[in-house]
Image 1 (cartoon, rainbow, N blue to C red):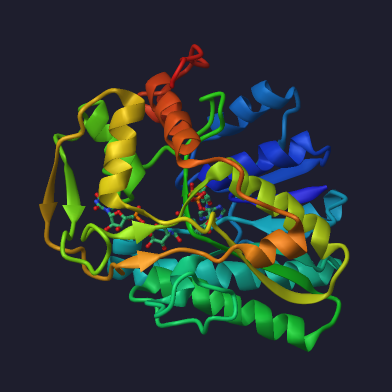
Image 2 (cartoon, rainbow, N blue to C red):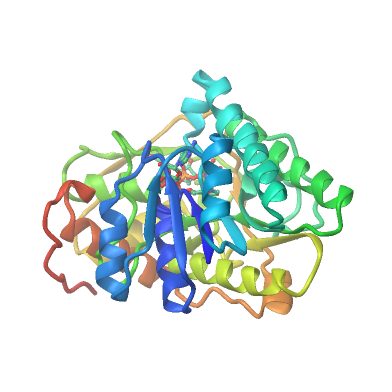
Length: 347
Ligand code: NAD
Ligand code: WQD
């Protein structure tokens, strides 16, 4: 059985689906501070299997002890964390406590229970403003410009030191680039709280007129059209990367770092044009000042994961946008719907 912390959230729910489809038993631990348990009901609808769910906090060591004693858990996928960059600047203690101390509490409980296999949600943000593209895993980590990014780098360092101290640990640090999209059914997807910070959720809300227009942060970057370039990756490809990493953990000890990206960068303006084409809707935008802390460009060299995990991002930008749009149209208020929505044809 796999314990999935944060399994009701955006990426976690897609990973739970992939785990169930691969034949794993799953126990989800989530305090629902940024998610709904309806996501897991939808996963059950899709897979015909209900993941077990415990509402609780990853910082609660006694609860973790109880779970590890009660269930035959062999490995942990650790998604639970806080991820809003701006909020992390305003509330640094909450971010460090959840993302760093939460990870430490989890590892302590795992060690007490004799469980040493861990897949950790890291982020390309740990590279900071990398000078050369694409980014390989052996590029030195940089100085993240906000407490969120710092907390991910600190958690990575804690996990590296832990694995160095005890050869029983086998830990995957998965550095995600920019996850977007939704399961192709449109039944599960990203359900941001309040006004979205990230590009695609914001574009989706502009398209359904919940926001008047998109602000493009900066038109004067040293990129081919002046707007920021990122490596967007389909959340189902990301979920599959976790399955591959989990399988690999059974075969190797120590810490391994893998980039999960496509290797292809798209600018904000390219995203806007592709989105307009897929949705058939004009996306009003204006170019405004750069967002503090943003970098010009960032894309992965994913070849290490390709070689070592036999993993490849298979879905292209069209699939990412079409699947996100289907999710948005079927769930205009996210998981606030009581009923499972009707299927929607897109693209
Ligand atoms: P999310 O907010 O949708 O999911 C995180 C889940 O963790 C939520 O369900 C939340 O309720 C839960 N959670 C938060 N604090 C908790 C706690 N103390 N105890 C138990 N549960 C708790 O976010 P996501 O986009 O699915 O991100 C998952 C992980 O991936 C996070 O660790 C995030 O930092 C990391 N990550 C995300 C991105 C991205 O762009 N979405 C990129 C890189 C890394
Ligand atoms: C993408 C591009 C923006 C919104 C963040 C975190 C990172 C990781 C993923 C968790 C950039 C531009 C955005 C908007 C815009 N999360 N943009 N208008 O900043 O690459 O990464 O999410 O680990 O840590 O920093 O993603 O989606 O916010 O931005 O022009 O309204 O879109 O400037 O070029 P980012 P994003």
